[in-house]
Structure formats: structure tokens, C-alpha cells
Amino acid sequence: MVRWLICVIVLLLLAFLISGRRYRGTPRPALTVGVGGLAGIFGGVAQMSGPPVVAYWLGGAFPPRSVRANLVLYFAVSGLISAASYLLAGLLTPELLLLALIAGPAYGAGLFLGSRLFGLASETTFRWICFALIACSALVSLPLFDALRG
Image (cartoon, rainbow, N blue to C red):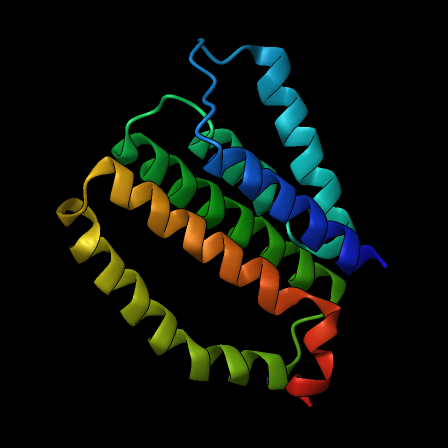
């Protein structure tokens, strides 16, 4: 049920972003803290803290370089915090570390390619690429497709 709920929330946030509405004002501390709290709830429930943060940055009137830099920093720091938490809780098993070593080069190559391609797109293209990635993530995460994952 939780996965269904998160996927629906992500798709609703995506629909809002696609609508073109933007928050044009200066980010207020209360809004930023609220987004952080919602991201914390998402992270605690399903280890998916990204949707509220991505919606916050893509939903504002921020330049693409700022959006990208802030999201890269956010995911890097949250990844380190998660890794430290998993390590302290004893959740990082040798099997999981081996999987990370196997997947790591493909992830790194994707990051490298994405960083090389970043400056080539217009702001509109950048946003639509982000929207497409969000849609793909939400759709493939639907429990409806669990049978296909084996």
C-alpha cells in the first residue's frame, strides 16, 4: 500500500510540475523546512526522500545549473548519511557490497555522461528530461510490475 501511495504522490507532483506552474518567490524557511520534513518522512518510510526535494527545486524559478548543483549535493549527502546509518545498523552485508561494486561502474558512467551532456540542453529540454526520468521512475516502481521483476 505504501508503494502505491508513494508512486501516486510522485505522479501527482509530476503532473503539477508539467502544468508549468512555478513558485516565483524567494524560498521561505517554513517552506524549506516543510519540504525537508516531507523528504524525511518519505525517506523513513520507503528510503525515497527525493520526490519532495526534486519537486521543490524543479517547481521553483531556479536556473538549471542551480537545480542540478543542489540536487547533486542533496543526493550525495543523503547517500552518505544512509550509508553510515546502514553501516551502523549492520545492514551492509558482503553480498550487498558486492552488488554495489558491480553496479557502481555503470552508475559512475551514467553520472559522467550526464554531466557531459548537461550544458547542451536548453532549460525547457532540461526540465522535460527531468520529467521523463521522474515518470519512468514512478511507473517502474509501481507494485503492478512486481511480477516482471521475478
